[in-house]
Length: 292
Image (cartoon, rainbow, N blue to C red; front, side, top):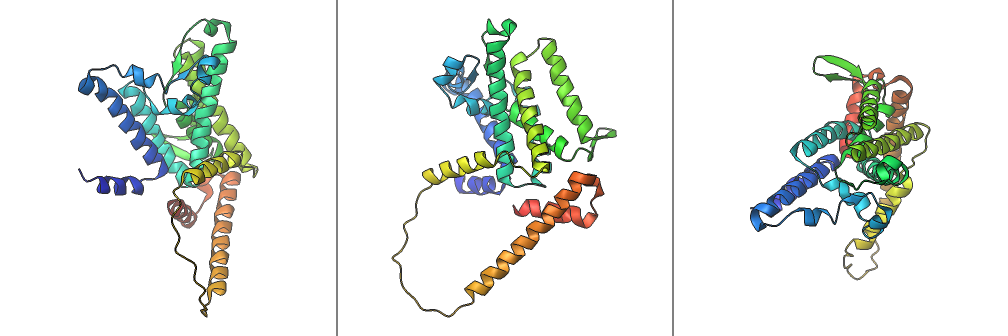
């Protein structure tokens, strides 16, 4: 197997596709453990699944994020990854990877917190033992974010078109109905936690406030700590006549003009909907998303 080729193909994926690849790889590995080693994969999953008990959670705080990388079965992972693929593409046509990571993982965290809160507050749930796995909270966060950010954009579902806000309402009503019937209570609580985060993020962003900015900065600082520092060659003083200053000013100006155009288009979407854009504006926004 050419590992170099696999790394290259992985690097070419967008952030949503990378998350899908990681989730699928973990799912395959977990399901191969009993076949290859004859041991129960549950002993591994229990280190990463999110418990409903706060004290059990404190012994493995990483589970507030890691639970999202494990799935209960083929149908569970299939639908989560399918939705993540389609709505991830739409999201990344509008925003960069960092914004996607913020919406997705803040949704995962919000879903996990609501899951634990529900099981520790409501009497009917407090006497039951449950754990949470699956990417549904993060996927729901991305889905509802898109539905709230460009609510009037239409998408085709089988034989008819629906507006995104209608899809968002349907998803939330389905989860609330399922919760009221007592089915998959933990999963539905996580869905609703992700939905609240996605909706709040989108509405605040339309007002000019990025509630995930602090989270992005935190991840960047953590990445800086673990980044391998490259050994720099000794400094040399060299006199060279160049046009660096003038060139850098032109690059900065071009970047600012590019960003202003993106902001203008996004403002138009927030006021009149995605369908109000011209073909040239849609093409420009699509290319800008790819460049990010």
